Length: 414
Image (cartoon, rainbow, N blue to C red):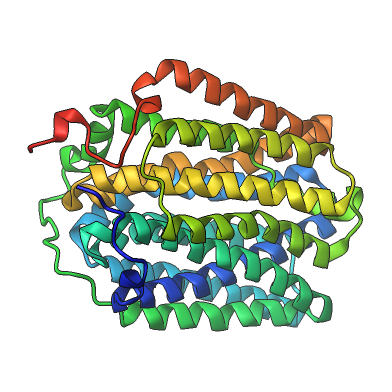
């Protein structure tokens, strides 16, 4: 069955998805603005690349600890309630930072507390929103919905840091206060989402039911390959944590430049996601996924070597564009191959392997930068991404041979 032959206007007619998309933009914009404030303030207070890396490690810890709980909750309870609770944590954290700035009480430790709270909220929000998407559109529109969902995130990553950088020049306090407003808007929008009826499992939270997501992934080799490919690529190739260093010390472009640097990957990703929403990939999916991983590595190397701001922006845009293709392919495969009753658990594990690799990758980048310098850290990530792509093509040949968005042979007819 083809999932991609419906006209694109069909997606905009799905009111639950439109509300979800808009709420996603609001929440992600505020998240990105808050991340900009935290990153800049930490580097201003400490001048430490290692402390920038700690931001990623602190967010990684709750992702690991809460993964199994999050997945089981997402399969037992109303996913909208979980998303709203996570976004409420975001709003309260932004309010805390607003009060600290107003009172002149902002400190390194308080910023790390804020990072931990954000990490806890994101551990619940990200996998639950992923599991919610298929319940908002007919099955034939899932692939397009994935691309549009990706575009929502990338739109926010473009607008959030750019807006945050501009407002920050006038007042950091105004940025955090604006984040509170955006998070509140997201909570309101998700409250009006009405997904298609799904039967949530009410099985007791036994160890077996909690670990079912791991068992499912381990029995499907190409799904395991998809998830672990991104884990190791992002673990090695992340550059986000080092952007404050590039903005202040290498490119010398200040907070506004930092906002543009943080927005550049999303600009490339957004344009790509828009194209994919209207012209989805239909053939040779596996080979194209590996190709864009290689482009991701080359773009990372280009950024690491650049000391010219426009070239750095171009490299980051190419990095984001290649990552967008990878995200759409991976997310579509995960959702299509996973039954709704298990999507929460599988999505939580996917977030642990994929989403948390971003935060752990930031720690790795910051640590290597503290030892060897920011440029060397980025170059190691770029060459490492190329190496991982080559190894996974050898170790997971079935992944390379995927042609269409269809269940594997062992799942057909079940």
